[in-house]
Structure formats: structure tokens, C-alpha cells
Image (cartoon, rainbow, N blue to C red):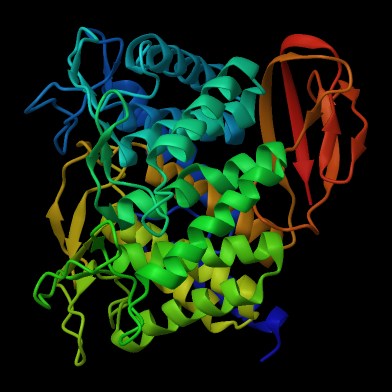
Length: 485
């Protein structure tokens, strides 16, 4: 079947599916606009309405299924900055003042409260008054604070934010990267950046790439970030992929000896394997590195052979290491989202229509089993049949980030790669000098071009563009709309 006929058939099927279900929007999941609508109507409004904590000036940490706070009130900067990512994405898609105002407030909170002014870097935890309660510098926390700041910088072109991003990344490179033990980032540093936990793990290694480095390279086009991406992914390929089974493993000592967990069903984190494959494919699109493409495809095919996406089109959470592989009985929201996103990148990498089929079917599970259209946002986990297990809305590791990144990625990939439709982005430039450059293309594709860039709305001034860049005027706090094709 030709590609055009295949896509047409699926769009018809999706319309029929939509008409038969009261829980779906009238447009189909293969439409990029569907995901833009989900981000702006099903995801972010509930966070705006229920999740803001007036006592702390930022967000509640723990929220139950109907958005009531519970448990500890400790605040984690990594979670707060994930909300910064979520609201930056919301403004990018909407141009709504309320979204960028919350993003502005969140960025200020992080810099005012969470930055260690003596030693640099971000505290692991604070109380509601902004007093540090955890002064360690866990790599996971450092990375995800930079992640939110990076998308905020992408939207605002704020030079102060870029300075904090640069200082934070430099600390990871200078203090956390192991120059003597075979490379890789340590898990945890003490407040003064002496080594706390010299072990290495998935969450310390690939999260700089999946969190911020590719976005930061796209925003700045600085080659040092591309080199950093390639160095980190080389560690993944050389040190973290098990030579016997092909799985990406989790925990290692400083010398890269694997710290196994007894071949239990939770030993292999399938979400992290999806994430590794996705990052290798994204990086390959930037560099045309065939070794990265091959490594990414190998991990994805390992997932497929093992049944990582089961017969119900649920992307399962974990598996045992040896064959025959034993699979977990459920999954989490972020893993199903990653399964959807990797399917679109596999389609781009291979031009194989089966990956659109994977996306369509697993996206239907996402909509049916995870999205809470009554109370907003998504549930935390489901079982292998798609039945609800945990309806919690927020926790230390659950914020608006994964869901907004999911919608943002699907909107771009479906419009630009599948449907050949334009993508519209909105920017609020904090300050620019005449001739400054804005790089508004977020996904990795040198063939994407700028159709138009306007200051002042539809009847505003058309700016000069050059390839994938916009030439900015001098100005402060002005809005810029860009259309990509």
C-alpha cells in the first residue's frame, strides 16, 4: 500500500473511532492539531487551576486524583523546573499571556530560591519557605532544572537564563564528569561539589541528552553541545548496553561494572530503553551518524521482539534481563508517552508505515486509559490491559513536563513529517539587539524551513529569515509568531 493511501485509510479509521467514543476529540490522533488541543485544553489548564501553591509561590509537590494536596510539602527544584518546561511549551503552542506569566514566575523562583549562591548549582530540596532541606547536588536534579530553563530560553531568548544554563552545564562538565574512571557523570555530589556517590546510572547519564542538550543545541547551534551529546551517547553505546542481551542497563559502579538486581522482572527499565533509542535516533538526525542510528534501531527492535508493547498496545514498564523475557504487569504515563514518541521517530528513521500503526494504536491507549478529561491531565499508571492502577496527578517525579513534551513532539512530528502541514510557534522575546539570531526549529530536521516570522500579529512586521534562523530587531518584551513548514 502506498504511503498516501495508508495515511488516508488511518485518518478515516480514526474519524470513525472518534465518532464512536464520547471520550475523544472529533479529530484523530494522527493529526498534529489533536495534540496541540490536548496540551492546551486537557493538560495545562488543570495545573493552572489546582497546582499552584500560594504559600510557597510555586507548585504543590503531591496532588491526588482530584488535585487535593497530600503528604510531604517538600519542594524539589527538578519538579518545579519540569513545570517551567510545561508552561514554556504551553506558550510556544498558544501565545497565551497566562502561560508565559506562570513560566516567568517559575523561572524567577528557581533562580531566587533554588540556586546555591556560595557553591553554584541547584539544591536537591527546599521547604515551602525556600530554605534548603537537601543540600546535595544529585545529577538528576541538576539536569532537570536545566531542562526547564532551556525551553524557557528557547521561548524568551533571555540572556540571564542562558547564563544560568551555561554555569549549570559547566559545573556538570567540570565537577561531575568522571575524567579518570572511564567517563560518565557521577550520581551525586555534595554541596561543595566533592563526590557524594561515585556510582553511575541511567538517570545520571542519558538524561542530560533527553532533558536539555538536544533542545539547547537546537536553540543555540553551539557545536560544544553537539559534541557533548555525542560523548554521552558514546558512553551509552559502549558502557551501558549489555553485550549479551542488547538491553540498556541501569546501575554501575565508578569503573562501569554492572550492579545487577538478580534478573528480576524489574531489572530492565523498558522506559529507559525507549528513551535511549529515541535519543540515539534524534542525535542521528542532527549528525547523520549511522552508528547512532543502528544502535537506536537495535534497542527498538529488542523492545519489539521482547513484547515491550504488548498485544493491548500498552508499552510496559519493565522486564527481566535473560531470555525468555518476563514482562511487568503495567506501566506509567511517561513510558506510554515515550512509546508514542519513539514510534514517530522510528517512522522518520525507517519510512516504515508499521510505526505509524504502532503510534495510532498506542496513542488510542493513551487517550482511553491515561487522559483524565473530567479532572484534567493524566493518571500515573495502568495495568497491562489498560485498567487504571494509580490516579495520582502529581508527585516528586510527576509534573506537567512529560505530558506537555509528548503533545509538543506529536504536534510537530505529525504536522511536519506525516501530514506535511505547518507548525505555528509563539515567542515572547525578553530582549534582543538588532541582528540577534533566533533559532525556532525544535525538532531535528534540516529540511524544515521558516514560512514566515511576524512581530505584532497577523498584520505585523515580517522579519528577515535565513535558513532555519530569524534575524531579530532591537526590542524588549515583544511577541513573535513563527510558522514552520
